[in-house]
Each structure stands twice: as C-alpha cells, then as structure tokens.
Image (cartoon, rainbow, N blue to C red):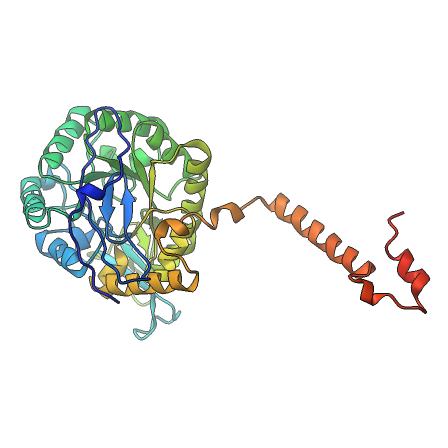
Length: 414
C-alpha cells in the first residue's frame, strides 16, 4: 500500500455545520494518493481524517506511548481510553480478559473469534492523561485526537470534566454511555445509555457545555438501539458510535468449575467483542443508520464498531452508512500495524467496484433492507413473473406452425 502523506490543508476545508455554542475544530488532514488510487480520506463533523479507521476507546489508547504509536502507524484518528474526574475510584483486576476460539476444544492454534473484558475505564490520574493529550496535540497538531469521558450522575462534575478535557486540545468528545460492567451503582456507562430519560438529561448537560463535536457511544445491551441514538442526536450530539461490547459470560472452566476470567476463584459478567460480534454490530449500525436517514438531516455522523479485522469488515459498515470505523480488540490481537492492512484491503474493495472515494459507496446497501412481509410480497411477485414468462413466448422467433393455436392461447390473459 502507498504510504500516507499527512498535512494540514485548512484552505481546502468545506464549510462546517455550526451548532450554537459549539466550537468545531478546523483540523484537516489529507491522504496523498497516486493517480487513480481510491481516496480513503473522510470528513466527519468538520474533522478531516486520512482514512476512516479510528482507534476505539480502550487499552490501545491508554497512554501517550501507545497513542503516539497509533499516529505513527497511520490511524485516521485515536479515541483515548475513557477518563473521569476521580481515577482513584477505578481499580482494575488481573486477569481481566478471556478468549473464545473457533475450535470448541479451545486449541491454541484455533483462531480467536471472541474476546471478553472486565476492564474498567482509565485508572490513571486525570491530570496525567490531560498532559499527555496536550503533548500529543503539540507533536501531531494535524491529527485527530478524541477524548472519551464518563462521569457520575452530577451536572457539575460533567461540566468540570468537559472543560478540563477540552482545554487539553482534543478535537472532539466521545461520551461513554455504554460500558456494560463499569460502576452502574454510580449511574455511569450503560446505566445511563439504557435509561432514555436519564440519557436525555445527561446529554442536555453535556451539550450545553461542550464546544467541540460530541459523539454518544451506544450500548447494544438494549432492546431498541435507535431509541437512545435518537435521543442523543435530538439532545445536540453531532454523532453516535455503535456498538460497545455485549454483556457476556465467556465460559466455565470444566476442570476447575469456575467462570472465566477467574480472579481469586470468582468472576463477573463483562463485555464481549471481536469477530463473533460483527454480525450483531452490523444489525445495530443498520438500524441506527436507517433511523438517522429517515429522521435527521445530513450532518450527524455514525462511527461503527464491532469485530473489524479486515478491510472488508470495514467496507460492510460503510455500506450501511458509517462515516468512520473504530477498532479496539483487533489492535489488541494484531497490533497497531493492522491499519496498513485495513487501508490496503479497503482500497482493493474500492478498486473492484470503481469507487474513487468513501462517499461513493457510503450507505449504498442501506436501501436493500426491508420487512419480512415485504420480502414475501417481492418473492411472490418474482415467482409470478417467472411463471408469466414461461407461459408465453419471449420472442417472435419462437412461434411454430404446428403449435400456433396453443402458443396464442398461452399469452391470453382471460
């Protein structure tokens, strides 16, 4: 794959959608490509990225060193691990991960298809993380850095966190309304994302304070994911991200009879990710994308997450309407260099279909989803049409002398 040349190009930036009281970053990064090469660059809420691939919030964005590595490898953007005001309340355990392999016997040679974590948000002091954000923006002023934030049910705390994180220079905020196992007793994470009344109130607090674009990260652990997505957008968020991990129990060790991951003989349900969740994520993203297309004007964005390990995985999300594609577990399994493979494979897909830009095919598959009732109707019509064709003559050359009367009758409607 051709290397990416990154440069600021504010002079070429298109007019940005303005939200009252909201500061839109004027950061622009261009991907340089040879003649005829598909252009992977995307513009999302006024932010220009060289490609649609974004490091998802989690361990791959946990400190300066790893986020710098992500930028150096060529990721389109980085979402840092979620921060809150009081990191002292965050205490992680080890082991905190468990894997599911394709081989039912768990052979280590078998591909990993599922990944579970019981990891919490960042346990590092907020000020430390903010200083590292500042350093990253100083060294990479033209790259997109997004702060992920989560806080207790307290308006003043949310406002303080937003103000402090914005002062570090981040280009946007992603709001973690979706962590399935992180401190629900403090009304954090999915405890908010699963309660639409609570979500609407907290989104209101956030959007009256934020001056950069805001993405609300959706939980899949809900019956109808379009409801919280709709509320987030109506409450002023510029975009939604979906999906976060799925609540799960990875398995039981049949030798010890203890659940995995096992911490001092005990475990707790955690978040499920990796390739096995990809079909579920596709369905959730499709549902959100259809709702956004039907109910909202252009301008709001959709960032897709779930089981991305190849460029084709990403192409599926984009075909459903995603603007960007986040990868977290994939980086944990394959490393930061994965982005080169993702870009090369996505460009190969685009060449096969003669697409020159992401916008050429974004949302192209969305119109082909319908109801089961409509599928039955369409199939019945198709069958009837095929029968009609078989009954009659398709061309004048098919007439015969001996069967002329029967051939005539075959085309009479009554």
